[in-house]
Image 1 (spheres, rainbow, N blue to C red):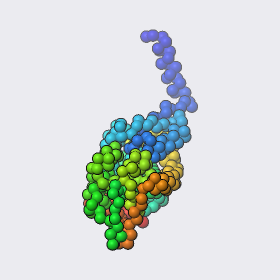
Image 2 (image 1 turned 45 degrees about the vertical axis):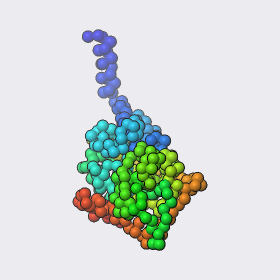
Image 3 (image 1 turned 60 degrees about the vertical axis):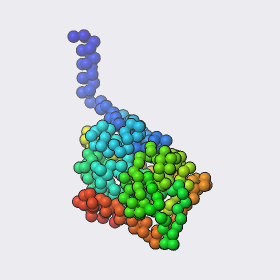
Image 4 (image 1 turned 30 degrees about the vertical axis):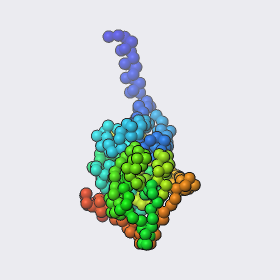
Length: 327
């Protein structure tokens, strides 16, 4: 045996057994659901930076990229199978795995209130069972989704618009709501929206106010229907097996930063949404406010759609979820 190899191996064995030696830093591979330039991509990077700073030497997140690495619709399955350790993605993107995730959009309370009333513990157990996932945080909450239209929608006598005239681009989360209003829905990922609007494939789009102009969609959709509906449902989660492998210290750091970032991102999202709305209006986007019976029907439809769809798929936890997410 080469004496230098033997000596090096002996020294390593002694060093690893010596008291006070630090364990290797845990590295987690992560993928986010939008481009890095979008507000959601930047928000996730802020979370990553906070973890990496506080977890130096213990745990570190390595961002692999966005939809170019794992398509949006495959994020939940990639995490379930352990192909990625961590994802940032709306619950609405993988309702096929965890239909109960729709409760996040139907929530009427803040993420930290959900932790206090037992709802977070309940939904985390469901994600563990159905998605092999451990939820870290519900981030960028506090605001909802709007319908943006190409042509100006006219209000009828009842204060509503003619939804049947619209072909609306949605995500899986909003599809049933849009169809319940009477519009036609087309489910597309964010990467397809620009071309669809440019070519006139769709006449309306559902998305958040924040980030909307980042994609350039506002130059096609010059009208925004108010009010917004649902609550944004962006989650940061981990493969459950990988979470269980982490040291207690690493898990504590991730949980601590996640709880703090829920509040920080909530406040930042509310402020950024208001600023983005003003900016688009200053650039010529017009607001169409639903009124009277039209407004009442719109809000009632939003309130019942999510819970009804969860019940249709699996009604096991509907009562408990509704009691905690929308008390």
